[in-house]
Image 1 (cartoon, rainbow, N blue to C red):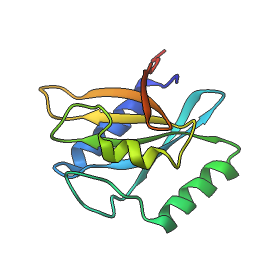
Image 2: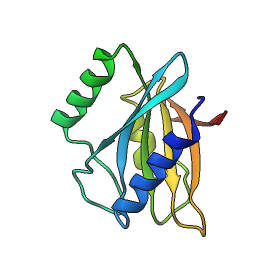
Image 3: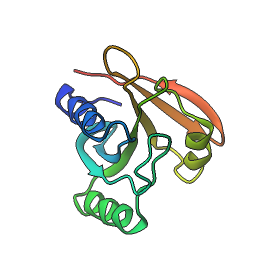
Length: 131
C-alpha cells in the first residue's frame, strides 16, 4: 500500500494519544493508495485489544464508500508488544479478507509501523510505500 508520511504520522499520533490503550481506525484508499485516516474509538479501552463499536464501524464504512473509496486498511496499535499480528488480530481478520492490517508499535524507543495481509489465518508482511 502506498501511503503519505502525513497519514502514517496521523496513525502514530493517534496511537500515542490513546496509550496505554490500543487505538484503532480505518484507512480509506483508492487504487491501492491510502487517501484518508479515519480514527475510531476503542470500545474496549484496553491495552491488550481493540474493538470498534458496530455503529461507529458502519458509519466509517459508509463514509468511506460514499466518498467512492475502499476500505484499504484497518489500523491499531500495540503498546506492549512488537507490531506483529496477535492471535486475536488473526482471528478478527477472518471477517476482513483483502484488507491490509497496519499495526503501530509503541514498545520501543521510536514508533514502528508495519503492515500485514492476513488470509484465512495465514499472515504475510506487506510493504508500506511512502513516496
